[in-house]
Structures are given as structure tokens and as C-alpha cells.
Amino acid sequence: MSRLPGKVAVVTGGARGQGAAAARRFVAEGASVVIGDLLADEGKQLAAELGEAAWFQPLDVGDEASWAELATVVQERFGGLDVLVNNAGILHFGALEETSLADYERVVRVNQVGTFLGMRTAVPLMRARGGGSIVNVSSVEGIGGMAMLTAYSATKFAIRGMTKVAAMELGRDGIRVNSVHPGMIDTPMISSALGGVDIDLSPGGQRVAAGRVGTPDDVANLVLFLASDESAYCTGAEFVVDGGATATHSLAGPAHDPRRG
Image 1: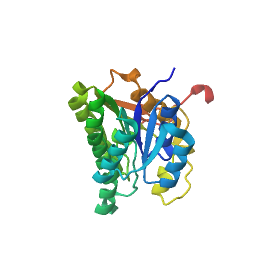
Image 2: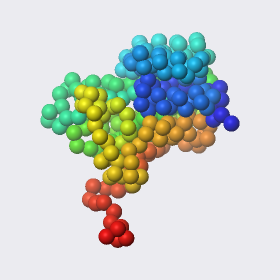
Image 3: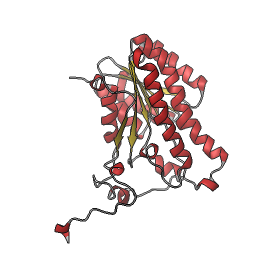
Image 4: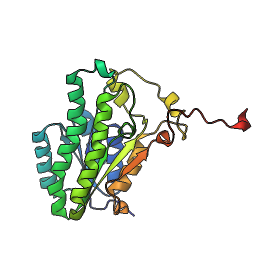
């Protein structure tokens, strides 16, 4: 049985990576999906792959007018909105003292302002449908900090906080708001932040309990649960999908198994 029958969803940053994985899962589970992204070629290709249930809409998440255009498309084409996945995000590496204001503001505009505008846009559309689910994609860097990620961590902590406030305000409207906190996931984001350099993530995967790097599908499975009515009593909460990265702390070394010498 489908888990999202008749639902209408918007997935930001939906052209590739985690967003594309979520869009595919949603369509497979009976939803119609609007893929919002600035990557037009990849977004259109994905929408064509998914068929009539998908639509690509150019979206600059940090721009109010762009969100207004998306809202009009969602209403006119699909009749409303049930699910919003605020997935769009960018990464910037840099020591605190070497991070320019322009770089900091660029990350805030996409990650933090984009999430704010997305939620604000979704509320009247969802309220008209009698409720809905907003899934804000944060990060394990929204739970604990990491060196060289001042701007990124700041925005991911902000998303965590905004999620809780929105959940408190919107619960009586039947709108649930939760945050998802991925760990190291095999997407193009890290490579893009480093100028397109190919990065071997496998050493990082060996440091977590699961012993591997996560996949976009790992995140999509959790996002699907939060989008569906299966999570009807979940709101204002943090859901981690990190292979066990947050199960420990910086003083813990590799687990020693005496059977292995």
C-alpha cells in the first residue's frame, strides 16, 4: 500500500543528492512532487524520469519572489500542499578568522533564510488543506559543532531552533514540523564546496558505528516516514540519520574488540 497517496510535496534542492532520492521515494509512494532547484538541467531530467507526478520549478530558496512563484504553481497545478522538505543547502569550509562576511551571509541565505521562507510559504497552503508535514533538513553539525564549519553549523543549529518554534505555533493547525540530521552522506555537496575536487569519504565512514558512509536513500527513508501519516504524533523533534556518529564524543577512541587482538 502506498504511504503518500494523493499527497502533494515540494522538495527543495531536489535535482540531485538527498533531494532527488526523496523525490523518487515520494513519487513511488503515490505523491505528486514539485522539484525546486536552481539546477535546471538536472531538475528537468529528474522530473521527466518521474513522469506526470513530478514537476520541476526553478527556485532560489533565498528569494521571496521565487517562493511566491512556486506557491502559485503548486496551487494551480496540484491544488495545494501537504509536504515540504526544506533540503536545499550549501557548505563552506573555512577557519573562523578566515571566513569572510560575504561567505557567511551566502551560507545563511541558502540554508537558514531558505528554510524560513519555505516554512512561511507552506503554512497557508497547508492550513487550507487541513494540515501537513514540514521536514527541515539540518545536520549532525546542528547538534554538535565541527571545526572549519562556522557558517554551516550556525545555519544548521538555526534550523533546529526554527523547527521547534514552528512546531509549537502550527500544531493546532495540524501542521507537523520536524528536523532531520544527516551525518556523512555520499552526495556532491562536499565536492562542490571544495571546487569540484573528488573526495574519498570512506575513511570517515569507518569512524562511525555503522562502518560506512550514508547514502541519499538512507536519508530519504527517514524523510518519507516524517512526510507520511505514520509519524502523525511526531513534531518539534530531531531525527538523526548518521550511522552512529552522535552516539559518542571526541574523547572516545576506536572500540577495542579483544577477540581481534
